[in-house]
View 1 (cartoon, helix red, strand yellow):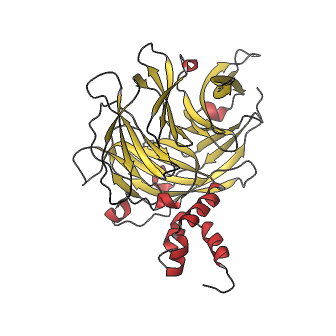
View 2 (cartoon, helix red, strand yellow):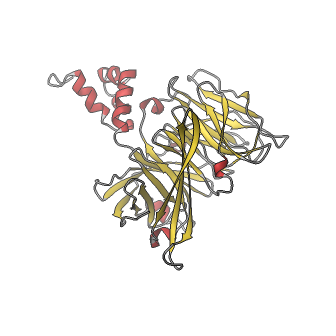
View 3 (cartoon, helix red, strand yellow):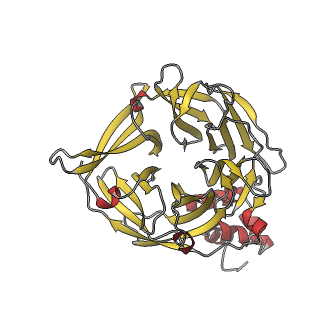
Length: 410
């Protein structure tokens, strides 16, 4: 080691590297390996990574998934950033579904060529291309599965609905991704009865939440699943009754729901505005209560030309709206609730490979993506798509241009 660099300085330098570079440095020196393989360094690396959150783009086209990552543009940052292509999973998915938790992706129902004749749940790292095929699970075709992370035990778990022979979803299955030597297996967990899952799951502090119809009276509830204790609970959410396409988000550490719709403006019947409704679960006099706020965004032609979904909320307090399909000019919108201002991030394409293909791909965007070395080293992810195909990581990238859209008023 260079005598002019103390161990602390060296550790700080390594903590600022990308996860793949830091992992590679372990193989270059025994001394570096001893520094970079400690739990303390993993925590330090995660702390640095958390200060530079990113956007993770998952693009599905013809059953294949491609992953890109870009810096998450802040209002004061440079107007041009780069989105890098990382991996492509060329399996075949039976549904356009994937679940994200702490750096890993779950495909609930995927066929991996050469692995099995059946479809299986697959957990993968979108950066490294490493993945694990989970044991086959007999489920009803409309069952949902979600990936969760226990931040205390540092363990990933998959929770899947299971009701192959009845309409009531009163049983679930849970699988833990443990150490590399453990055999993966599903175990049955009794859960609450409800009719239909209505949303993707959101994780807050080790707890999964998703919206569902109550089986008894068709009211809306939020299902709460504690990843560590594996216990279920219902949260009353009838405020979402009659609301379409409600997305659950992490609102500054609190559970919240968002939906949007186009409505006519108050001043001019011909003017169409975007109305965004936000419900936040607050503690009010020792009880939980949903508090609603409504925001009206003035008409923006660029918004009205595309289909988009709520991707989430950044730690900086901006709600993120992302286009549902790939395009040569792709946009992500950031709405600042406090300033009541909308800004647009223009993605100039997801690389030449995707732009050259005529059919559109569906896009899922995950906000506040951070690199975690403990995820990078997940021992259960033994397979690698790059090694199986004899590929090296392509160097495709997309330029992202940030544009400021004029402020909007409530």
